[in-house]
Length: 196
Image (tube, rainbow, N blue to C red; front, top):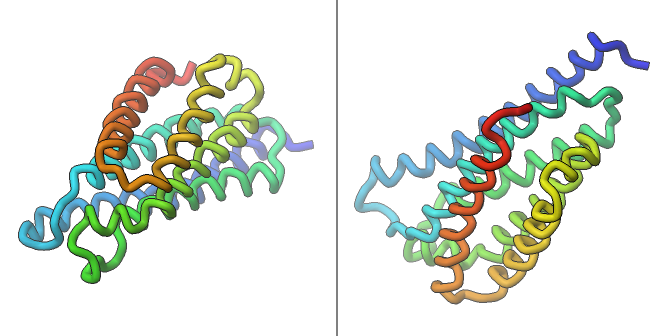
């Protein structure tokens, strides 16, 4: 059985590895967004695309704050590590989809984003599966803390992502990104101001 000191060392090790991937994700978003300042006459902007960029940036900051609860884990396993590492990989892939290396073959970010929406929303739906697994890793008490809303939130996002994969309707996508960003900010302020 692991001692408290060795458990804390494992937690720090996992946090460092996850931190590197989260940092790369944030760097990808910031680097991509800075292109609009560096080359204002470059690729045509899309406010729906930019909305998802902001959503992902807030999600990454929230994810890193939320993951401090991993410090309460008493028994680390490779399976727990794989869940956490898989979660961070999916978040990174979402960021690379938002800002690919090159979009010259597209008319702008709107054209690019909608051509890749199946990948983006498929991976976004997968984050809610990983989020549930991550929450269970921290203990059933974490699900109880958020109540029925937590499960309903995950199911709703999973369904909405499925619809977003299928429909190219700009109005649906506009409402989805605005609603998602507002809900994410309200969710964080309601539940995560402190880690108590």
